[in-house]
Image 1 (cartoon, one colour):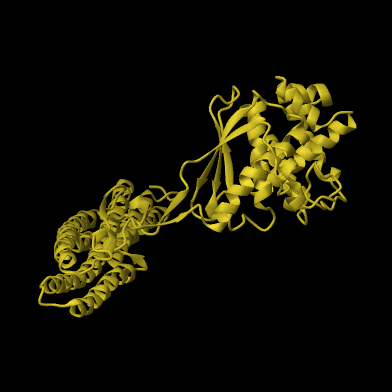
Image 2 (cartoon, rainbow, N blue to C red):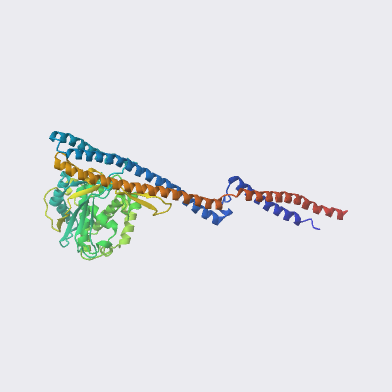
Length: 535
C-alpha cells in the first residue's frame, strides 16, 4: 500500500474530467442546436457545411433575381398591352379613313388622332422604366454629325493648325527628323471621363503602317480637366507620334521617359504647381497610373535636361543620339557617366532637393523656360504646313451613341455564368415601321392598314417572347426553391444537432460524471487503511 500517490484517485479524476468535457459539449450542442460549433467539432464537416451554405444563400438570391426579372418583364408587357391597344385603334382609324365616304376634312380629323397615337407610343417606349432602366428602348441609338459647330471647328483647327504646329513644337524641342510617314486621324465618341486623345503605332522597327491619332469627342469638346487644354493634349500625343517614327528603340524606352518627354514639350508645370514635389518623386516616380505619375515623369525629364546642360549637352542632343540608334542606357552613360538605373536612383535621391524653390510658373514647356509664353501661344491657331506626316481622315463623320442597353442579364444561379440573357425590345414607331404614317388620303390609309398590321405582329411577337421568358423564369424559381430545400436538408444533417441522440449522450455522460464523483470519494478513502498498520 502506498500513500505518496493515490493511483485509483488519479484515474478516477481523469475519467471525471473526460466525462465533464463530454457533458459540457453535449450541453453546448443541445443549447445551440448545432453539432458543429467550432472547427474542432468536425473540421471536414465544417468545410462542407460552409460550402453548402454559400450555395444555399446563392440559390435563394438567384430566386429573388428571377422574381425581379419577372417584375421587369411584367412592366414591359404591361406597357406593350397598351401599345397593342393603341395600334389596334390606329388600324381601326386607318380602315375608316380608307373608305371614300370620308372627305378631306374627315380624314384630317382622323389623322390628328393617329398622330397622337404615334406620339403616345413613342412616349410610352421612352417612359416605361424598371429601376430607372428603360425597358422598351433596347439598343436604341442617337446620332449627331460632324457638321455641328464644335466638330467643324475641331476639324478645321486640327487640319489647319494644331497638328502642324504640334509637329513643329516637337521637332524644334528635340531636333528629331523622322522619314515622312502617314498618320490617320480618327474620331470616336466614347463615354465622357476617359482619355481625350491617344496615339497607337508600330514600334521596333519604325512604323510600317499609319500611325493612328484617335480623338474622343466626348471629352475633347468639353475640355479634359482643369489644368490642361486640348491643344496641349494634341502636342503631348504628337510627341509620341514623332518619337515613335524617329526612334527605332522607342518601344523599349521606359514609360517615365516617354510620358515625361511628351509633358516636357507640352508643358507640365500645372501638374506640379502647389504639390509636394518630394511626395510625387518618392511615391509616384515609375508609375503613370495617375496625374502624379505623369508629374513625376515630367520632373524626371526636366531633371535630366538640367543635368545634361550642366555637362555641356541637352535633352535635344540626347534625343538625336536615340534617333541615331543608341539605347537610352548607352546615351546616358556617354553624356552623364550614369547608366539608366543609376540615373533613376539619382533622381529619386536628389530630385526633390534640386527643385527646392522652384514655383513652377508658366507652362513648364522647354519652348518657354521663362514662363513668358501663354498656353494659347504654345500651339498657335494659325495655318501651318505639315512637314512630317501626311494626314488622312477617318471616313466616318457621323457618330452613333447608344442610349439604351440591348439586353439584360439575369443571374439565375448560385455560380458564375449561370445567367439568362433577355434582349430588350425597342418599340418606338420607327422600329415598328409606323413613324409618320399618314391616312389623309385613301391610298395612304390603305397602306397604313398594312403598316399597322405589321406593327401589331411585331408587338405580338415581342409579347410572346416576353411571356415565354416569364414562364421560363417561373419554372426557374420552382427549380431553385427545390434545389435550395434539398441542399438545406443535406447541410442540416451535417451541421444541426439530432436532439434525441444528443440527449441520450448527455444522459449517459451525466450518469458517468456522477459515478466518477462517487468513485473519486471512494478512492480517497483507500489510503486511510494505512493507519491501521501503524497502530
